[in-house]
Length: 421
Image (tube, rainbow, N blue to C red; front, top):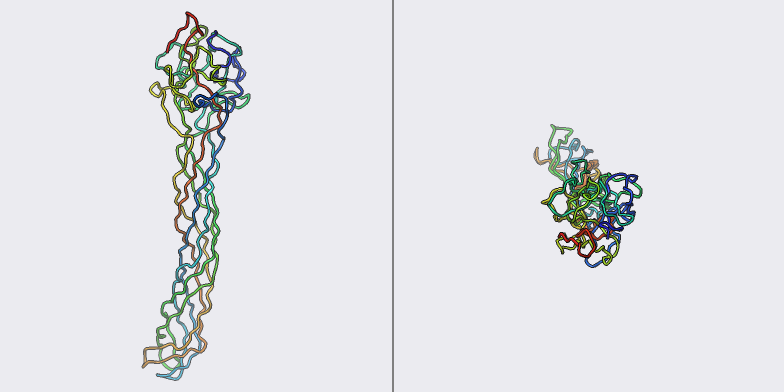
């Protein structure tokens, strides 16, 4: 049997037009990441997705704010008893602050985590297989390897010796008909979080103003201070509004579950173009794996690639290194919202009863028509912080399962079988 039977898959990093004679493109892996098939499961199944998103937990925000209130200068004629026959209540004001919020706040909603690409850092390649059995590996073809030995004319794919730099890259099939060599993807997973709350209407609980500021005048005598008095503050109901939405982001490192193997480019021809231990891929049945290959399942001196994505390395100490996860969540996001300044109305404040002037023998002023116009000054709602956390989501990119297989011999059987593992 030939060393490289039809159906065994290796890697090409050049153009589609330059695929060597006797080899052809494996279109089933176009646009796909190879993922090790599950235990005792035939490969050639697809899964994963180009993007993922999350649903955030439900949250709400309470509102706490107050308004300053101005009782503008009010006056009117008055009659008096005590020190004289008449006077007035001109030129005094009050100030105050509304009571706490009654109602208000932001409705309970969940956040939507925007869709984000599942692509880890990748390098696109063309997966190739012989059109029929061939004894030689193509010049500039790439294979996987899990040993630390070297071979003349076989170079680690680290950008040196005219090799592509595949260090820490996931190999992704180029799109249909496309050449190899594109890069992209990221281990940093960033979502924008968007959501919209309904704003509830609110009032402010009643409270009392401060005392008077300014003076009242008596028409027959010197200016006298207006006697101590206050007014009650209460507001009408109003609905505040929000400005925009918070630009929340979550940034975490996210990779699919991987195992590292060396990627090696052969630059030889003829009988020195191959080596024992070369690792390729297979999308036929497990039973149909060629006899001079073994499955990479942790047995027979192989790395266990079952259920793992391939991540390339050029460091021998990294061989077999694992990491990543096929699902993830995101840390809780603490946030608030910014309101738009708003105000309330308040009825004009009139004087009822009498206003005592404690000077000049207890002069007593009785209001007849003294009125304050009231201004409730604008204020912005202050919303409490609240947190939202992400539901678990699958971050696997689009894949096709393969059986990673290792060349164990130069012949399929008989006296010339060379098992080098």
